[in-house]
Structures are given as C-alpha cells and as structure tokens.
Image 1 (cartoon, protein in one colour):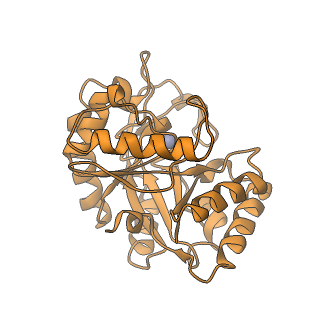
Image 2 (tube, helix red, strand yellow):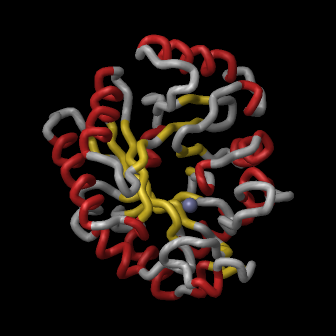
Image 3 (spheres, rainbow, N blue to C red):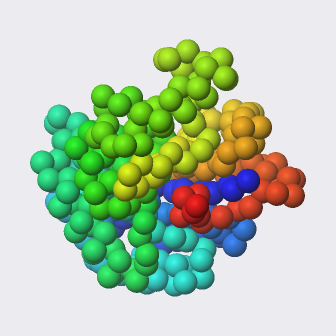
Length: 271
Ligand SMILES: [Zn+2]
C-alpha cells in the first residue's frame, strides 16, 4: 500500500523556515509533494500580507530567492517534489482560477515550463487551486499530460471532458459507492487511481483545522481494506501543533503495517 503526502500553496509568500518548521521531522520519512504556485496573486488567507489580498499583483516565485534556493536543495534530496498548483491561484469574481480564468491552457503550459526551469524539477502533477476545476480547466490539465491530485473531484461525466475511459471509470466509482453503502450525496475519497486517455487522477484526504485522528484513520483503513492507496493533503500555513500531532500519529499508525510504503506523490500514479 502506498502512502503519500501533499502540501499546498508554496509560493512567493512562503518563507522556507515555515516549511522547515512543519516538515523537518517528516520529510526524511514521508516525502512532501509541494503543490507550488509560480506567479502568486494574493487572496485573503493567513500568511499573505493584507495589502496583497486584493492588489491583483502577480509575484513570480523567483523573487523569493530564499525559497527557490531551499527548494533547489530539497528536490534532489528527495525531501520534496514539486507539483503545479495553478498559475496565479487568484480568485475571479466568477469562480476559482481553474474554473474562471480565460486561458487555462496557457496557464498550465507556461506554469510547467517556468517551474521546471526555475527549480530544475520534474513536474508531472497538477493540484487545482481550491480543488476546483471546470470542464475546460480539466481538459487543459489533461492535454498537458499532467496527473491530477485533488480532493473530492467530480466523477460525473457531464462535468468532464469525454474520453474512451470515462464511462468505465464512472461505473467503477459508482460500484465503490454502492459497495460502501453511500448515498449519491455522500462525499468520499475513491482509493484507487483513475486512468483517463491522457492523464490519471487520485483523491486525497484533507487535514484541516478540526480534522480528527479517528476520521483520518477510518479513511486510511477503508482504503486499506479496499486494496487501494492513500494520500494526505494539508496546508503548511495552517498546520498547528494539534494538526501536526494528528499527522504524526497517522504516520505512526500507517507505519505499523509492514506493506505500507511512504512514497513521493508522483509514485501513486506509477503503473
Ligand atoms: Zn491552494
């Protein structure tokens, strides 16, 4: 069983010390997939200065030299890997970036190229800002050949670009939902990779303020019983001591099973 860890929102506004504080005792055991924003535009959240919540100014990652040099050290050490987390992560009046931007195709293409060059990192995963993707946003990511690591992605064929694998995947998810006694409206994380024509998708379990150890263990155990894999997703900027404690206890729980392997998130998609 594979177990991976994803952390969202590394960007110009991130101090490398904050990542070190959260992950110094984690990343040699569980590599962290940092879903990183190449040209961050501020929005209202902890860790972004208030004057940038609505300034609309885009900050290229390279302007944070300390972060870039830290990432360039951590990637070859395999402590972190880099995923693309949108292009600016800005919120539009009509939706989140990959629902509402007029040019998602260009954003994916330029974002990947920029980060590959700047960080000398392989990028094969896309994490949608706010876990939100329109049909066109999803098509843009798929066309770039990036795999998607999300939380609560929609499987409904009407919400997705169509390809030859779509109906069979929809049936798989439906079968899993029925086998686990869930109603259509119940949220759940499907514990296997879904492979589409040009890309694959996998869902993560969120660790946010208020998430309990028991909730995560039950998600992990369900994935385990199903013979699936598991990915935990969090945000470094809101990891409190209590959340860190939940995280470490979950790793300890998973590590009790001899067949659990802590892997970089990219390996979730390996055949
Ligand atoms: Zn984000």
